[in-house]
Image 1 (cartoon, helix red, strand yellow):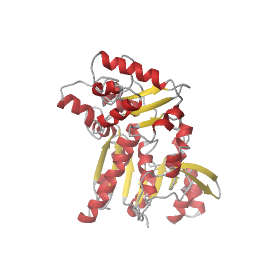
Image 2 (image 1 turned 180 degrees about the vertical axis):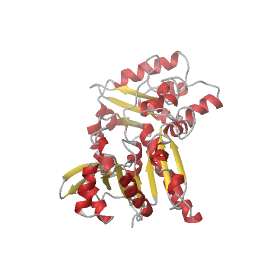
Image 3 (image 1 turned 120 degrees about the vertical axis):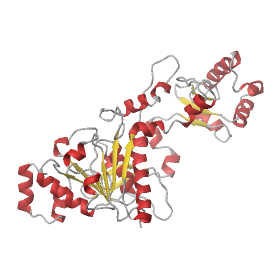
Image 4 (image 1 turned 90 degrees about the horizontal axis):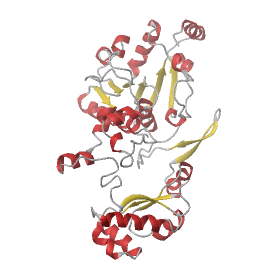
Length: 380
């Protein structure tokens, strides 16, 4: 038994946010069919992990027959996920208001950069743009240097994909009570704004304007920072609570620094100089071995290949090997959702573009000659 077993999802989204959402749903057991126009084949970076547990078909929604095929699929679906610009689905005749007439239980989720309304609704954008509009980019990096772009797509995955999955699951739960579906409007800018409780607490609660690299959690103080080690690698220190700071100071033989954890003057600069010099006296591994059993909050700054082979990551089985009779063995990132009774799993290898088009059409009752005709006419 899987948590979302039996839930049929039609995923019309592309690129990253929507497909990341449908990956979460598919891992939890949903039957996900991704639908894309063939003209998008080869566009965007290939990320096999987010294509797992799904089927993929090509379909031209601008073609009358393509729209009819889609409407047949909708009759059996419970969730539709799309990532078009506002107004596109209405022009195509597949918007929520039209489809809910024949399926009142339908849950319809739209994922866009800026939402279905507002002055930015028709603007194109990517992760870096949503982070910049939300004030996150201006807060990321070192003081007096240009903002730093995060190396993972925070808005795409968290503000877009995860919030969409959460919204869909909430709507599924509500439908059990009301018997009705609903429309979900997910904006990645909204999602990032919602992730600002700490910066806004400084702004609204303390009257401070957070600045890049100059807040409690972004490097202002020695107790919460990153330090270079002897061989040029780095460790992260998170001795935020005073009790952790006390243990560190005692271990390093500097009890005199204990009362100056959040000093705003010359003492802060002195402690920075001391810690930078001290941590460069030993390697990253030596420091980890010496401090790992103490309540200090220390971490190794790992490179990606190291992180994927870390013993804790391996123990939690966050990197798994999947074997497919046709596609061979492959490594995939696992689901982080650990459920005791209905655990997510990987059942199907990442789908290739259009791999299941003919399979889905045959399930709808189309014969071989009809399918070939559709290919020639550009329906699929």
